[in-house]
Length: 147
Length: 88
Image 1 (cartoon, rainbow over the protein chains, first blue to last red):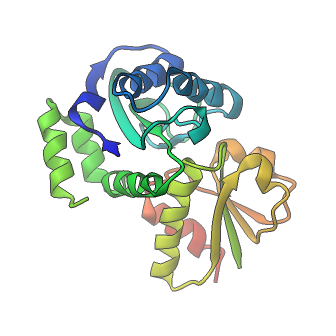
Image 2 (cartoon, rainbow over the protein chains, first blue to last red):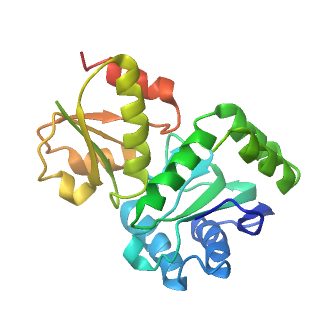
Image 3 (cartoon, chains in turn purple, blue):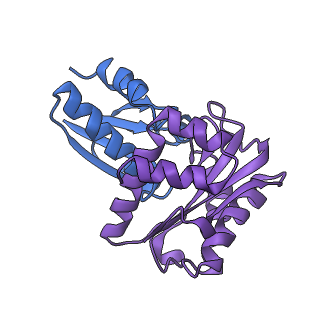
């Protein structure tokens, strides 16, 4: 399981469309050998098919696809967008944080979602991620919430 | 009582919602059978309540269960209000 490790987090990514935002977050999972390239395109395709329901909270999108679309290991990456992007979710647009989820079919999937919940259920953590200047601050945050 | 959490694929988002719904139900002291699934399977599955996002609610209009909409999946207070308002 790889959860928001340093190589999976990029602060200040400049994109102008939801597709590019999803691809930017997905590319880090591909580069980390955690998902196949086709998984990233499956995330984009799912967005086009099902809409922006995965914008789960104000400013937060969690794109994902199915395990059989090419997941090698349960994983979560993050890109923080320089300029917020409108995904088409009335309640929660625009998006600034994109957490790409490599959804595995084993128990690690549950564990990684629990980590994500613990992090994002706390509004103060979200605020700190939106404002952080370096990865170190996220690292501190992850260490401090006892995952 | 059966509660179904629904998302587009039935594996990521709906599971996140289910985990927080289960947390809220236990805080409220409500016992329920909670499950998660994708939007196309949900139409044929029996449930008293369906919890989903505004974006997917339209596709579930024909379901016999009552549809509840949650906007912020990470806001336990909102989930508690939505659930507490109609489940006793």
